[in-house]
Image 1 (tube, helix red, strand yellow):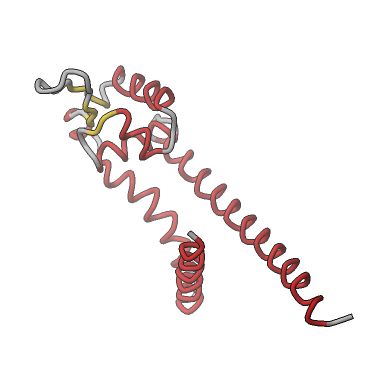
Image 2 (spheres, helix red, strand yellow):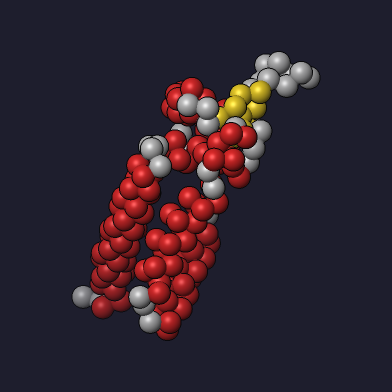
Length: 160
């Protein structure tokens, strides 16, 4: 029996176990982020998906429903339902441009912008959640995490 022939199987098994562990870590991170996102959305009286639409429209005003659904990776019908509810609540405006009556541009209503600090809502979710965790962690450990994530991102992008 040649040791070199056994090596690839061992490496494949190790790589598969490590890949499974990485996937579990990402799932755990996703669960944590989703829970925090849902909690903040509820505090403002919205679902996480509605808050997502608000954030997207704030960042990219006057986009179409198709563009919004692509950005959110949701079906057009799902996004349409979310937009309908937000429009009834006075959060979202629909505008049909004079030069192309077949499309509808979506944006956040001025009234909603005047009554809500969207940047603060977003900062509260993203900034506080992540920065609070980082503040409790040793600086060198955070640098290792950032370095590791960058390296992993590079590895995955090289696979494309």
